[in-house]
Length: 140
Image 1 (cartoon, rainbow, N blue to C red):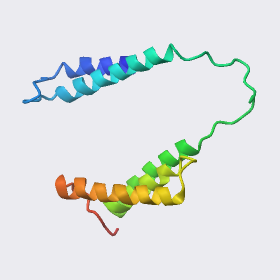
Image 2 (image 1 turned 135 degrees about the horizontal axis):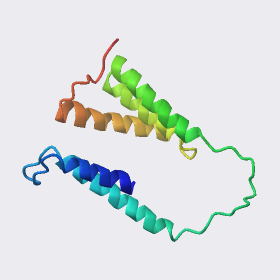
Image 3 (image 1 turned 180 degrees about the horizontal axis):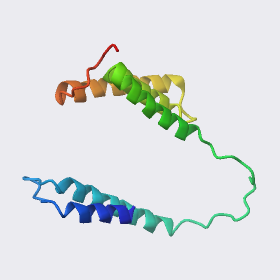
Image 4 (image 1 turned 60 degrees about the vertical axis):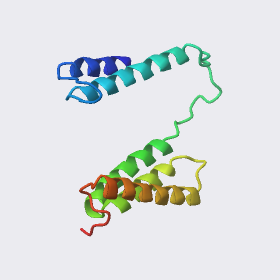
């Protein structure tokens, strides 16, 4: 993360960075790269305090739990498909609902309520405030 962040900072400085009141094309890559490098440093500092993993754990042949990864990837695919054919609201509902199912502690009621809440927020922010060109509902 540190290397990628510093690379983004270096690449961003080849453009005009500007100031906070007059941002140039390089401002965003420099800012995000610096934040990414900072997070990498914080992770490295925190990781040195963690105990070493047990070289002989009790669970030798356990497969990794892929539920979260599959749900997040599935939610993203559903967002792309439904965003193109159904609009912002169905796509937002699908990505939040499917991704929320990746957490084993979530219930269906929680996933639905989170999805509906995010649909309302997406409608207010993206459709009304930012006037995003993705229609709230579309057919085909």
